[in-house]
Image (tube, rainbow, N blue to C red; front, side, top):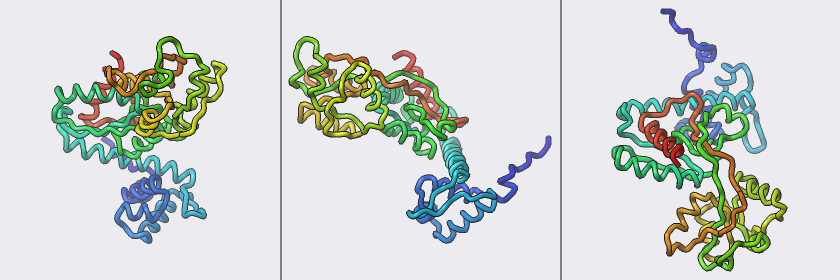
Length: 314
């Protein structure tokens, strides 16, 4: 059997220490912070960076007024370096966990609706069938989850695949679309029998994430298609906790994933209600995201399979 030849970068002297530095620079954007995170001095980090540029044969960073920025070549290498780091962490976990996936710790990322509709039921089932598996769940917007996935902070995410160069580094299994409903406090002026006129909805203050979020873009696009104006919006926040607090203490209403609205309005004495107004708002489908070509650790694969099955039967 022929002996595998090292790739050109390895042949030129690329080491794990170089990859660790590039991954740290991708995360921090500052050589001082990267050095601190790696437990080395800044001069040592600068020497490693110079070695990377010699090995790459092209500049991987440039000076800016605020410090430094990675070049296009540097970004490409740093993204790969981050993936290598994540794969090595997963390999260590594979050695530590039982190969059957009966035990281990799983880190899951999810947008709010998917967390309520798919992750929680899977974790409830896992408590009975896989009692030795522990889990932590990060609930955040899709773009932040994609960053955490690529950096190895989470094993997989229930989110939307990002646009741009990171898209090619992520595999996706489509799961479900995310319908949106309107939530308000109990005894809200619109909490009354009969249909709600669009004009009455537009008279209320709406709480939504920032305008560049997919939820807000989807809501505003749908209202425009219906010939409705943009609703008043005195507060913009991505915090679901703050959204709940505001609608409970005012007449504001909020568009939220239907699965989340149902979870918070299901009890007869719940402090929130689902307004009987279907505007046909539906956010584009989310999927189960993994690092491209990566193999999930055994415990993470078991939970991911349970979530996929749950999506099929939802």
